[in-house]
Amino acid sequence: MLIYLKLVRYVKEMSKRVTPINVLDREEKELRMVQRTVILVIMLLAFGIPYTIIICMSFFTNPPKYHSRIAFVFIDVSLVFVLIALFKFTDPLRTSLMRRVNGRTNTVVAAMT
Image (cartoon, rainbow, N blue to C red; front, side, top):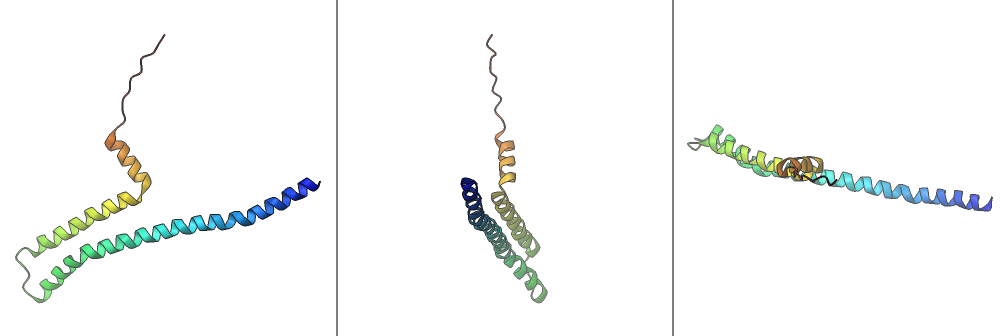
């Protein structure tokens, strides 16, 4: 009976220690998610500023000759970089795509009889 009581106390103390570890793990995951979101927003802002400047410039002054092409290039390049960042941040997508790119090796093993 004494061993059983000690075991029950041990389990209760253990549950008190386990909860903060789970909370810490969840907070780390949430922090990583916020960090990735901030990186994506900064990338979109950095690549979107030239586009915004060119469009606003076209309202007030005479825009450059190919302003729409220049703006399109900035948007297109930013899309590529955002897709690369999303590819880097999502592990299941990365492993699935790398499996398809690398292909599966077809190894033929001879049956020995």
